[in-house]
Length: 121
Image 1 (cartoon, rainbow, N blue to C red):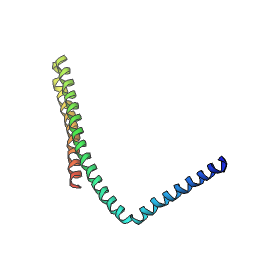
Image 2 (cartoon, rainbow, N blue to C red):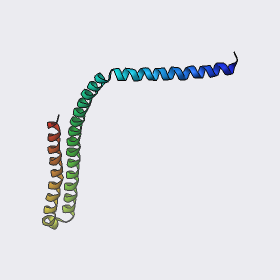
Image 3 (spheres, rainbow, N blue to C red):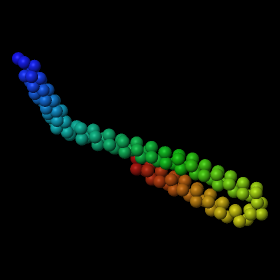
Image 4 (cartoon, one colour):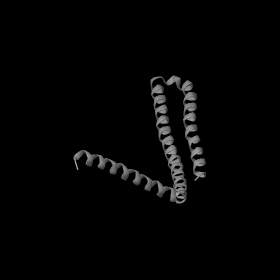
């Protein structure tokens, strides 16, 4: 046999082996569809619960951390402004407290959402 015939035969055998392998994998998946579907549903439920738990924990942790940082920055800026102009303390007090309340309300909203997410687990 010449080299062209061997290479064509090799290509045909390779393609035939690839098709048979693909059909074998496909047949195995079709025959085990019920078991795979049950396992996928169980894994999906566990993954959903894991995602909810991680989301609630990370959301609350990030909200608390960045809320505390922003409150610290707000108070720091207010104290710096008061040290430069002590007579402005009456005018700065209400906006400072409102800013702190708005920052803290976002953290509290995150806490409520985290409780709802934990309730779904």
